[in-house]
Image (cartoon, rainbow over all chains, first blue to last red; front, side, top):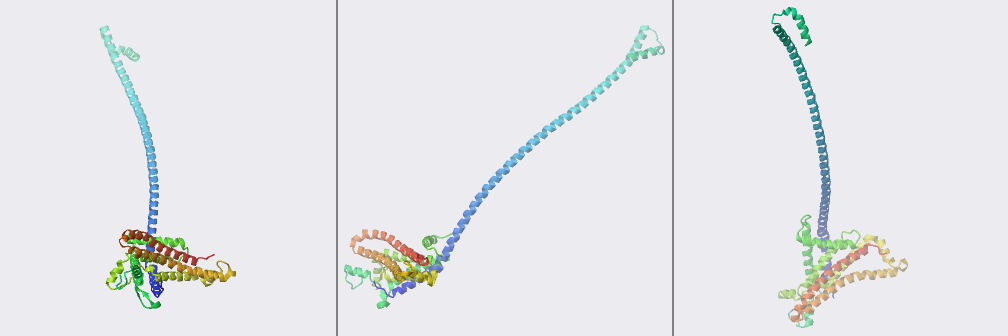
Length: 156
Length: 256
């Protein structure tokens, strides 16, 4: 074991290598590793956030769907109600119209009956006069009997 | 095997444990240690610096992933142990772990391989594992020791540092004893740090050399030892790194 000047040479080598490592090796690599760590952490955080957002969006879409369903059900109910109402109204209108038609028809019928009756009354008087003529087999003075005939007509 | 050296067992071992050196006395330089450790370090750290320069955040390549894996492991160890905020601790720990690991890994190259290749070019001695050279381990541990002292003074201030030196652990009345304890404690740190690494790697290399001496029997023995040694290589790099972090955290936290 002989200690000699090699010691100084090796100390210089050692110092040079420490200097290289301290200046050119460790700082850039440390920075690269730290940057990568940050990148990964950020990526994971972003992933977590996106997952959370997806969950929220899913919840929101489910809510929207439920709302839409409720609203559409409401609309359908309202529409059905309205339709029933309309049918009811139409029925009512139709009934009123029909009643009107029936009433007018009845009135017309009554009028016609009245007319026919008046006509028949006139013709019956004529027939009665003709019958009486035949029965009497002679000319009956219409003028003389007209008073009686009118009275008869009134009676009918 | 060096020419002219006796083909004896001890000659073989001594040959494998001799550094390629220039200079005389204290001013001797172990060229093999300096070159191998320097090349490994330059390869690793300039490579990593290039990689870090074009590091991708979103699309890291295989190499970047590997480097990031190792570095973040070391950083985690540093963060778990060192609670202050220092821009130096993690890079220091990274440097130690990777550099020591690579230098230890040279142990897995068959012991005769590089000496044989270099022997052809006329280089007769070459110890390829730099961490079996105490000069390297002491250089590292003393650097760590210096950083430790500087950090202690920086965090606590000169007054706080001196106060701690003279009053911990027995209180102000036993100041000389405290100082003695502190000196022993602090000297023990770099020595244990460097000798642990040196001893482990030197012993491992020695076992490889002894196995290589067994002729045909080295074949079934070298592989298990190499496999086991992978563990030691990693563990020693980890221990050196970990103890450095612990020492630095001790230096920047109060002892009480």
